[in-house]
Amino acid sequence: MDIQKQAQLKLKQIALYQKCYSWSPCGKIENFLKQFDKPKWGVGETNIFILRAANRIGKTVTGCNIANYLCSPIGNKWLRDIKFFREFRRPNVGRIVTTKNAAETTYPQTIQEWFPRGQYFPHKNGRQFDSLFKFPNGSHFDIFTFERDTTEMESTHLDWVMIDEPMPYKFWTGVLSRLTYGGPIIFLFTALEGSGWIRSEIEKVERVNKDVFVQVVCAEDACIEHGIRGHLPHAYIENKTKNYDDDEQLARLSGGYISLSGMVYKNFAREYHVVSDLIPYWKECLDTGFYNIVNIVDPHPRKAFAIGWYYVFPNGDIVCFGEFPDDTYPPYHKIKSGDIKTEEYAQIIKDTESEFKQPVETRLMDPKQGHAPSEMGGDSIQKIMASKGLVYTDPSSSTINGHQAVKSLLGRPQDGQRPQLYFMDYCRNHIFSMENYAWKESKGLDANEKAETEFDDYADNMRYGALSGFKYFQPASKRGKQPKVWLPKSYRSKKE
Ligand SMILES: [Zn+2]
Image (cartoon, rainbow, N blue to C red; front, side):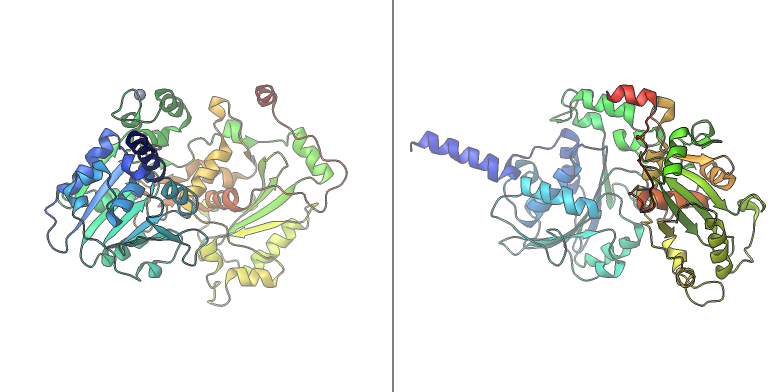
């Protein structure tokens, strides 16, 4: 083989197996890398670097290339040019903190794509996915997910930490205390719900450019036509501008912080989501038994329990058709304390359901209150309910994902996207809660990662349902033929 051919082959190999050599960040991410040389980096010093960015601009690819280079400096030009990265102490121990979903899907793919083949060794380390990565020089890092316990954060000494997506505040002290000898803490995120504490605790005016360094990257910065070394087609960005809801546009396209005040479900509107009659398709499903019933309870120590019943139909429609307190009580938000014992609630639920034609298949209860001791400090509410034959399970309680799931069910009827979530007009507590569920101006999603909201009780039930309960499955009690799945005319013609 002549020299030229050998050289070509070598280049091909580099392109294929050592993609990290060829990573070339867009202009604004290059600026982000330059921030690492800004602090003086005294002994044992920790500095924080924030890449607050639009969707799809290459956050995770940036994160993977930084992680790889920190562990073992395989020659990427952009990273080698930065003194901090070039001279970082090696071997070292790092950690990437991210969502379970990113750890299971995005990270394995991105690492496989960008890390140098044969120069790192992935291990499952007791998890379902590769969560520990070792390098021949002794460096290693692990991937830690948000749903783990805070105590698990406190196991090991770290030289660097990378946080991909808004991390719940509860891990923050753990992160700080792990960097015994100082080092960088790197935030990469789109500033959606859950990022409020990063703005109020870290991105403070008095800290920025002292121990906190911020780079904002908007979608156009990664545009092929309008950015520097961008990869997103301009048409793609334009198209996304149309699709994001008004609340999210700022965060998803410009990298700004989502506004956390005002109504949570802005796409809820009585004219689209409140119905006084069942549509013929729902009636047909009820007649033939092709539907499920979901019951969701949000119990409270002082207020009354907020209880709802929901139909789930084969076409994915959800209809809220029952609630407690019903209209024989004053409106829920005016009931100050519940003098009703858990056993009595069980009876109320059973009495209500005795009038249903079909048994309730799914029962969900607020996971926190559901396991708390009942009014007199005895067994948990779930335990008492179970002893009365009402078995509840824990829904996923993620506020962020839950809001997204409910918004998605509400659709964008103003733009012609049909809702899948409806409320019978007599379910006035649900309707009131959907209309008034709002972020409090001062707090937003703050330190405790709990929405500081009012009138959240029934809206919480919707969140639990949308995440964990509103999925149709063929009921055992079905009779006859399944009604033809119904779609509105406008939707039908679009699909055909
Ligand atoms: Zn553009």
